[in-house]
Picture 1 (cartoon, rainbow, N blue to C red):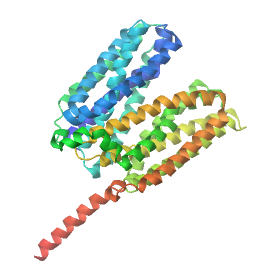
Picture 2 (spheres, rainbow, N blue to C red; picture 1 turned 60 degrees about the vertical axis):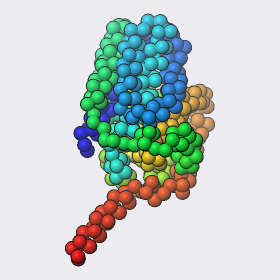
Picture 3 (spheres, rainbow, N blue to C red; picture 1 turned 90 degrees about the vertical axis):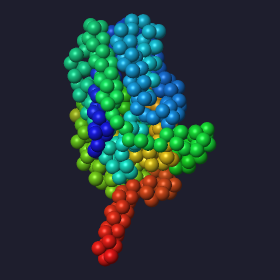
Picture 4 (tube, rainbow, N blue to C red; picture 1 turned 180 degrees about the horizontal axis):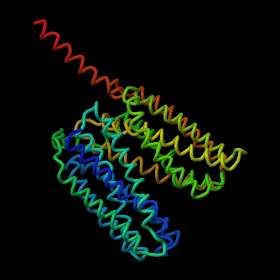
Length: 423
């Protein structure tokens, strides 16, 4: 791991730490502490998604043309201004405007940082680099949320202003760290033929494997991340009778599983076909939904229901740990030379769409029809496995099994050495 990659990972941890301070408490802050009501709080959460959907199509082109570092620094400044403004805003329009700035900045950070990781790694090291990123993100979110929970006081607006100030400071600190990164030269759109610049989106949509991966990614995020804070939590409270403290324990179990399992599963993932790893995640999540079904629809004790519900979140965490070194590197490997930023932004756009649609579908369904909710997302999880197997047929051997590239290099070096000795 070079100096540039170390700084990128430190930056990832800092940004996640800052987000952990505010994300769990945003609804409470807007609706109760500022007294703006549940509707305004709902609009704020929607603004985050809308802002991301607006800026991501432009972010990809900017990353390709200017490089990921200038785009990242701009996004961090916007996010810092948005976070500080949100902590000071006292009325609805000001809160929504601040949320738009913060949401846009956060959205652009993802593909910019992902492209920096791509530029600072090679195919053989990329899975480990993205696994480290995901590990540090979850660790930062967990620690930030834990500390933030001890600082907030719903009777004092100033305590929330402090949280948003800390978040803004983390973004500015990250900007300072990133400004010292010396990126290796990576091809930009200016290095490529002019035709690829004009038709970059058309070229992406013409990449069958990337289109299949995008569809698969939408289902992944819709069936997992899109349910965490809406459908699955509503199901747990309404159908399974889970207490709010048990819900917090389940979320902690998810983070703990990721932190514990991330590097334990990495060696297995690095030596397996990517398409089969994703298919395996679909099966694990299917088991998770069956476990959730037992928690809410079974006839066991409340203790058993709580244990099953916590286990559901832990199983989701295991799947996430398997996906982090698999999906993001695959997006990078599918991108033509100089187009990693465009592909990362397109995949981030797919993720945001899934995260916008997932809660809107899952929340009402879970609260009113718990059994159909479980069956629906059980089928979605099995669909992940089917889509992953189909994706595998569109991938080259090197895209599906990148470790073959490292092996072929070793064999080639060994052959060259043998020839030199015999000579």
